[in-house]
Length: 124
Image 1 (tube, rainbow, N blue to C red):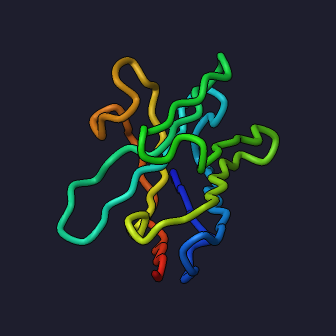
Image 2 (cartoon, rainbow, N blue to C red; image 1 turned 120 degrees about the horizontal axis):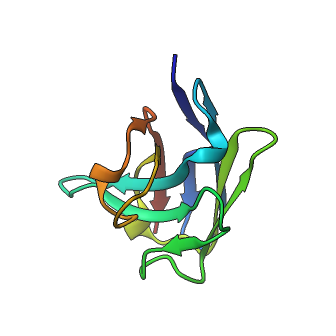
Image 3 (cartoon, rainbow, N blue to C red; image 1 turned 90 degrees about the vertical axis):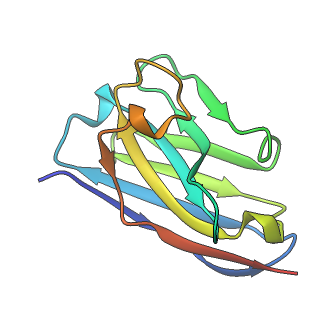
C-alpha cells in the first residue's frame, strides 16, 4: 500500500520557521520525484517545491525562493521542506506528492500519489 504521510505543520508567527516531513512507503522511492504543494483557503493547489529523483535538481515556486529549502533522504524514504521567514500568505494545507515527472514539476497531473496534508498557519 502506497503511503505519503506529512508531519510538522502548525501555527507560527510571521517570520518564524517550520520544517515539514513527508515519509513515503509502498513504492520505489528513489525512482520518484517528490514535491510539496499547498492549497490556501479558496485557492487552487499550487506547486511549492520539488526534489527530482535522480539528478539532484530542486525546483521552487518564485514565491518561496530563498525562504524554503527542499531536501530528500533516500535512505529514510523521506522528504523535508524547511520553511523560513514565513508569511501569512504561506498559510495553507501542505501536501506532498510523488510522481515520475515526465513534464512540468508544478502540474498536479504529474503526480500519482498524494498525502493527506498538514496545516500550516502563519499569524501576522
